[in-house]
Length: 108
Ligand code: FES
Image (cartoon, rainbow, N blue to C red; front, side):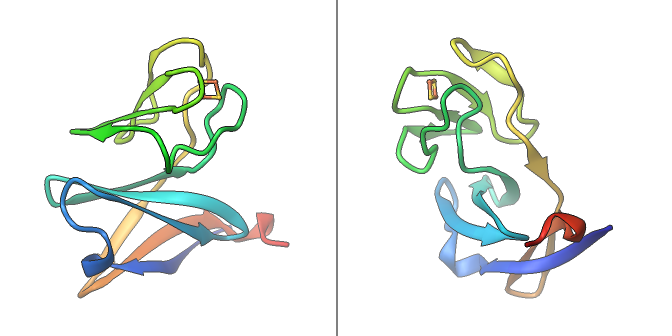
């Protein structure tokens, strides 16, 4: 069952930046792409490097380990060596709060 949980506030994620946090027991990144917020897993789907570290430009994050690139708005793989899309999560804004929809059956 999905439930929205607060993970950050809008002022923690300025435009063009990302913010590392936890949601439903998993590490996620919140991105601000031109004022719209998106959420993905923090770990690259290739070999699990953290995407909190690589370049983030526009809506594209680049893995610092082997340079796979992902569209953070869809999770789509844009460049190898990753082949598996990045898991994404729905985001809801309530005032200054950023909430992410997670499956609470996964929470440990
Ligand atoms: S771990 Fe991200 S590209 Fe290899």
